[in-house]
Structures are given as C-alpha cells and as structure tokens.
Image (tube, rainbow, N blue to C red; front, side, top):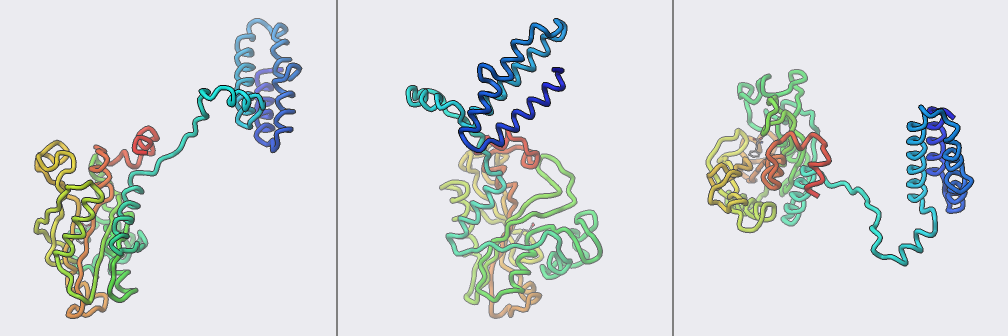
Length: 336
Ligand code: PHE
C-alpha cells in the first residue's frame, strides 16, 4: 500500500465510523480496523516488507491512522469497557466540550433589552439601508448639516444611504404607531470613519424612545438612564448630563457614567476624569413630531442613543474596537 492509498483507506474508515448508527456497527468496525486481526495491525505487521527508506513515514502514517480511528470509535462510545472503567474509577477526567461564548456585542444588546424590558420598553427594528427622510430630514437635520456630507455618510444615490445612526428607527416607529411609545432599537450603523482603535466604519448603536400624551420630562430621562447605568455597569455608577446639541432633540445632552473602575476617582479607563461619555440624549424636538404627524402640543418624549461597542469596551476592559470584529476565539472565549 502506498502512502496515498493509506490516506484514502483512512478517510474511508473514519467515514464508516462516522456513519455507524448503532453499537453493533461500531463494534464490527472496531474489529475490522483495530481488532487483533484488523487491517491496521496487519499493516503494522507488514512493516518489515516496506523498504527501509520509506519505513519512518509509513510507520508514522499508520500510527496516526490508528490513533484517529481509536478516537473516532471512542467518540461513538465503542468499548463498553470504558463505561465499566468509569464506574470503577470516578477520577477519570470527563470529555471536554468546546462551548462557544456569546459575542460581547450580543451580550450588551441582550442585557440592554432585558434592563429596558423591566421598564416596559419593547425592541423595535429597522433596515440598515435607509432613506434620506428617515435618517436625516425627519430628524430635523438639514441638507447642509455636515453629517449629510459624502465624506461622512455612505450614500448609494441621492435618497438612499447606509444609516449613520439608529435614530431613523424612531421615525419608523412613530410613523407606524400612536403614543404612548416605549422602544429601544439596537442595530448596525455606518459612518465613513477610518478604522482605528476606537473607531470603526461599521458599528452598533442602541436607540431609546419614549413618547407619551402625559408630560415627559428630562428628569424621567435621567432616572431611566440612572437605572440603566446601575444595572449595566454595577451599583453605585452615577449619571451626569452635559449640555450638547443634536438636531432632533431640544434640549440635548451628552450622558456620562461615573467610572465603574475607579468609582470616579480618576484612572486610565476614564482618562483621569472620573467620568466616561456613553450616550447622546434629549427631549424629542417638536419639529420631529411634526415630521411624523404628531401634534407637538399633545405629546412629549425623550430619546437617547449609545454605542454598543463603547459600552462593551468599558464594561469588559477591551482596549481596541477591532478585537470585536476579528473573530479570534482566544479573545472571545475569555468573556464567557
Ligand atoms: N443619534 C445620535 C448619534 O448618533 C445619538 C442620539 C440619539 C442623541 C438620540 C440624542 C437622541 O450621535
């Protein structure tokens, strides 16, 4: 038998074992291949007839075949004696199953859905390909706003783009429903950013929207985000609002969490400030209500949006955003 033929026989034997469906079939394959008169022992006996120069390679290949067949048979539960041995010796190590772990981004999204679920928020979804109206116009973002620029946004044509934020799902939700509305919208977003340790052209956001016919205030927003901060980052984490501007909220704020690592004293993670910027938020601008056909005199609400990668990076101490997309099991399984 040549080495090539041996490989073919090996593949065949492993396939037969894989295909075996009952214990009798597995046992007869064991006899056929590794039994006393099986084909592998016969090959080993025949080694003396192999030309000396080829012996080492041939011997190695046979041993590898034997080991693989034995492992495959064991995997099929061959040799009832294994069971007896286990009964006799409970210290025999168990078989190791390689369990995967949930991706950190999925974990943050699921955890967020759970936390806001407690507050009565449901999850809404929208497409990654959006219209100019949903992504910009209805969000009160005029054509001359820099975010509409070709250097900032992936445009397909004049009307069609890869959404730059999950905020268009607010618009879709409001167009399709009447208040009260309480949703979070997780999803993939795209910007023409050069990818570096903290930026990626393709990232994820979670948007939140609450609209009601009862008056909604900035204090409601703050209490909800304070609850979220504690559930997501740990008890004791505080929330701080800083004035900001977004076209679709008025007033607008940037939201910081107190640093969960140093408890606000200042460390590397929070760049010595004690605070970490995590979200944008504000009270829905009355003009946005106008775009979706709500009467701004009748309804009020708040919205917020944060980056999923950002939360994952600070929560799990991940220094480089690219690690989240490299599919390196050595990284991913550490967070199991
Ligand atoms: N969409 C904003 C961003 O991407 C975040 C935001 C959402 C701000 C909702 C206010 C309200 O920067």
